[in-house]
Length: 244
Image (cartoon, helix red, strand yellow):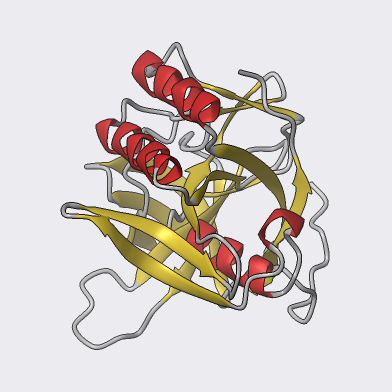
């Protein structure tokens, strides 16, 4: 496949650390992945993704790992990307929050422009936190929950890839925030380049799909962006239409 050339000064982009290439042997126990590096060494990498990873965890596929030499870290490698042939796919669920926050601060997301301050991991209710809070004088507070989307079937990006009671609770929290007069968004970041639209994965978790439609009817905004990914970095790309 052809990799896109991405330079870090571009607004709405994050650089990868240096990446080691290998072939995926298996992903197991949710957070572990066995990989044979190109130099022949077998390693076990941390898999920062608690979902099913349907459509992006096929054994034998090329994968890219970052190396972290922090003392005491049990697994020095972290799985960042997999090459699914039609697209590189970002599997690290920590990336979407960082990318959306930076892209918004860089002015690369029009719907989140005009805010002077953004905070992460904001407590909203007694047992609930929302990923990002955007504020500005004389504007309604804007609460944003970011979701990582890696499942694409026939050009349609789908979320979730596994049943998520926690994700349903996030939608209910956003709906409650709208009822209190705030602005609220569910932001789905598609960490791949082969989707043309988004829809809830009703066949996987119909309750999440119902909660998304209720939230949208109550005034929660649904924002979906895909990404441009290379082995150098990842950039926010274009808005995708939503099919409810």
